[in-house]
Image (cartoon, rainbow, N blue to C red; front, side, top):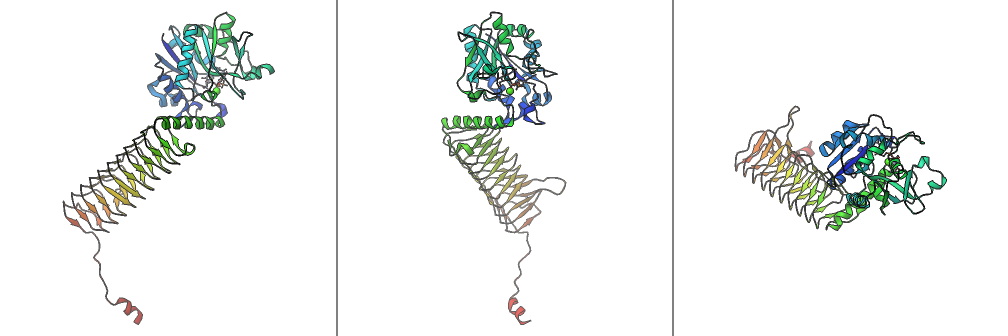
Length: 455
Ligand code: UD1
Ligand code: CA
């Protein structure tokens, strides 16, 4: 059976009170609608169509080719939104799952179970429902005397008895694709909001004696619909714990999951320990047996096995294995630290590569630099990379030794095995195996103190 998916993402999201389009608000560092689309991808659906309206270009830019798009010019309701996919999907045979772009916590496993239940029951429509302690704001599922699903009634249209119903519409459905588009034409907007409601399709099919069904999931948190920022924070909390739990089950130690933030797309090897205050963001990949934290932020970076990152920030960079960074280091984008490297406290590295076994242990700035293997960069050394207009490259070749508090005025090269005397300002290349001294000579005035006292 072919499977199609429609993601509803055209609503404005008034209740967010935001200039950012609702479904682009992030949960664990990823837009809500992207979570939904990524989960649908795991189902291997034949087609995915996202309905866009407000901020259409921004959504298409973020999601790219992961989905096809249909534009809903006026937001006349969820049924009207689905209708916009008719040109793309209307003629096809198969099962269509519809998911709201503001329910980022629904797992692909739950979607798969819903589809299976739907296909096995032979229903024309199946709603994913759950029991809510507080059903306020959600559509309620109205069942008949034998427990059969009759229809959905929205909060704003529900009478007192209907308001008491705890079983809610999660906003995810399965339909027979042909029946869906046929029935959408019959949906009316004579309700409290003057909108065309998608769940009305279920009631219409039922009244036409077609089989409709509900699949009840027992995890309410999975079906949270994010309509405002209070629920956004709740979704963040639930997803954060879900992600952390996944890593812990895979062999990662997380000392305090309440204060550790891991993006949905990060990968972490086993026996790695994450200490409190650690944020692993974007598509970061952390190796095995690493020690990360406390208080470290790693964004879109790769960290090798057995590496330690202590109270440091690492942005869009690659760090090798058995390397140690921090405390209090700042590794800025496009840096590449090799294996067995040591970056110590108060060191800033930017767009620099640092070869195997090299050390920059204290208080240095390495910007636009190419540093070979087994180099020692002394405390307080600075690459003077910027002349006010352009950035220039500093090269320090293998086994070189740069003394403390040196300025390397780029473009400049310290060749293999060369030495730079402490306190030097280097303006010319230093030849292989030589010593460069670029500082004023020391002069000692003998007996000077005594002379002062005499005057
Ligand atoms: C909807 C359901 C409700 C369910 C709840 C679950 C309807 C009428 N109600 O209510 O039964 O309990 O979800 O979270 O469907 N959208 C469009 N175009 C529109 C209107 C909405 O694309 O014209 C999109 C929104 O971007 C959103 C989704 O559809 O992603 C749901 O719309 P929303 O307004 O949030 O519906 P709810 O009031 O939450
Ligand atoms: Ca909603």
